[in-house]
Structure formats: structure tokens, C-alpha cells
Image: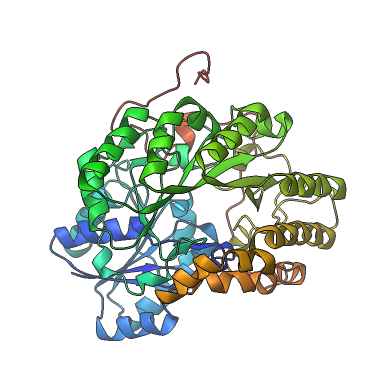
Length: 503
């Protein structure tokens, strides 16, 4: 079959700080191509909508898939589905991805026939049997597939992360992918899943708390095939198992592979395995994302981070000693008042690290979707982008956004302002000599993207598609109720006592 895979447009956050290659979509493309299908990919993060229009005319896909890792893209995806059906009435349209997995039947109803199926769970093991069933019948037998008639068998986990290797050759304008000054930047996956259970996160519910690892040799072989000088390691938590991180490092050393790396991990993992991170700094690890989420014990307990403020600050000191630049994420609770914003600004200015702010957002698939006592003030998918408030704010909404943008602007001036741009001329110059302008452009776009008037106006847009009403509970739902994948492919690696969480 002729299969067209589509990634929706960039979200607000991606307009400035990062734009990552759609690694999951590339892997699904590879799985479909391995099964004998003709595959093309359109990434609307980096390509204009006219390219999609042209592909619908010239390629005339028999099947079209939209990747939905973000709730905010669902309205756009439904419109793309309608367009595909109009262009080719016989085209089989399906959605897949992290976020849509939790609300598959609701989205099918909203699409009113424009979407034939939703794939819950991992796409690689599902795409080939799904396309075969779309052609020959039997959709109800495909694991993970949901149609208007009901669900098929439970989703399957991919047997091995070693394959399929992402079909990077199908991507156009790869030079548009970046994260911060790592421009251009490819992405790679070493592990999948997370053993922790933070209340605001759906990574652990999606994977059923499974945790799987790519083999060291497969990781090194894939890294050797990446042409970009910079690589983002997309793992939810990098190097949980120190022997795995060491094994990949050794394989890269044998191949003499040198790149600059950006990864995400936890403070407690960094503190337990400093020698692994030190080894990776010698390979080119330059940037690290730490989801601190809160600067006090009360906030950490609220989000069930299972670390202490002391752990977080010791991890920052360890990263500084290694020469790793850290980006800290803090979650903005809509209950914050002006004094709390002031305290956070003071903290952010007192540390050398980059500080990012995301707004607390109950998502389907997270525990707080069911237990957050505050009622949603909107169900507009487009506002569920961790940059808008979707539950009641303590401050008037206008004042909340004013304080949020004021705080973000202070952080922007600290790291991306003119003085720092002058200091970063070496980085800018090297990027510009290679024709890379993503980092340069982001330095000047902040005020156009982040402003209170724009965010307030977003709440006044007409709404056609809305999230389902969450079922609020006095107690957390049972774990199995939240899981997409109910059985792990390999045993879950849990932390040993005394840090065990009792789950």
C-alpha cells in the first residue's frame, strides 16, 4: 500500500526552544517499509501545509497516519483526516501516538467517520498487521487497534528496540531539527519506559512501567549512521542502569564516534551513577535536562518525585563539576500567587542553570487527570500544551499570565538576551557557517511567542473539538486501569530498598 505518515505542526514551546525529529514516526515508517509498503513522511513542524496538499494529490495515499504524541495537535489531525478523505475517499486513515492512546474512542467519535482507526500503544508492531487488515479485513484482530465498533486485542510491546532502525532517509529538511544551540540535532533512543510513577506523567502508564534497553552494539551502529554532529538522547530517564550506559559508551569509543549530546535524567540517577555521566562527558555530553519540578519538599511530594530538594541541589553541583550545562524544569501550579512567582524568579536568577517553566496540566493517562480536585476551566485540546492554564488560577487569569510571562522573560534575558548572544557569538558563528539559523532565530523570537495577550486570546478562540470530561476520584485509580500496555516485555527494573516505592 501507499502509506503517508504525517507529523502535525509545532506547538508553542517548539517555536523557540527545540524542534525534534519525529523519531517514533520514523520507526513506524521503517516497520511499514520493511513489510513491503511504499512510505512517505510529511513533518509539518518543518514543512509548509502545501507539501501535504501536494502529497495527497501526487502520491494519492491508500493509507494515511497522523502521529499524535500531543493533545494540542488533535484538532489539526482531525482536519487533516477530513482533507485526506476528501482527496481520496477510499483512503484508510488512522491515528497513533502517546496522547491519543488514552482517549482513542472519544477521538473516533469526534472525527465522525474521518478516522477509521486509532492505534493504542507502540506503533512499530501494529502498523504492518493494521495495513494488512485495512486491505483484507479483520481490523478487530489487530492488537492495540480501536475502531468505531470497539477494541481489538491488547496492544503489544515491541519485542526488541534494536529494530527497526528509524527511516531517517525519508525526512526532508533535517537541518530544521535542533535543541538550543545544538543546531542541527538528530535524536536517538537507548531505552523505553520509566520505572517511576510521578503523578503528573503518563510515560509510566503508557508503558505499563516496563523498561527496555537497546543493545550497546545496535545503539553504536545507529549512532554511526547519524550525520548530524549533535544528538538528543530521548530516553525518559537516561542511564538508569549504569552498566547499560557504560556498554554503549564503550561501543562508541571503539568506533571513535564523537558528537555533542543532550539527555534527560533524574537527580537521584545522576547521584547514584556519576562515573557513567563523567564517561559520557568525555564522549561529548554537554547538556542535561533535569525535571526538578519544584524547589521545595512540599511540591516534590505533590508530584511524587521521590527525591528531596537536597538531592536536586547536590545533582546540580555534580553536573557543574562535570562541566555539563543543566536545564531545569519547574512546574507552575495555577495556585501560585505573585509572591510565589517572585520567589521562583529569585531562585532562577541565583543559579547558573537554565530554568524552564511548564504549567501544571492534567492529561488523560496521568493520575492527576482522575484525582485533581480542581475542575477544568476548558476542554479545548489546543490549550493542553503545558503553556496555558486549564484549571482555575488563584490569580485572575490575566494576572497569572502576566506573572508567568514576566518570569519567563527574566529567564530569557538571563540566557538568551543580547548580552548572552554576544557571548555566544562563537556558537552562532559556527552554526551560521554551516547554514544553521534555528538557534539564531530563537534568540529574537521570545517576545512574539510568549506574551500574556496572546495566551489570553487563545482562550477566546472558537472551540470545535474538546477533551472528554475526566472522571474525578477521591482516591487514585488502580494501576492496571491506567496502563496502555498491561504486560511488560522484560522485567521492570525497580530501585532497591530503602528507596523502593512500595508499588
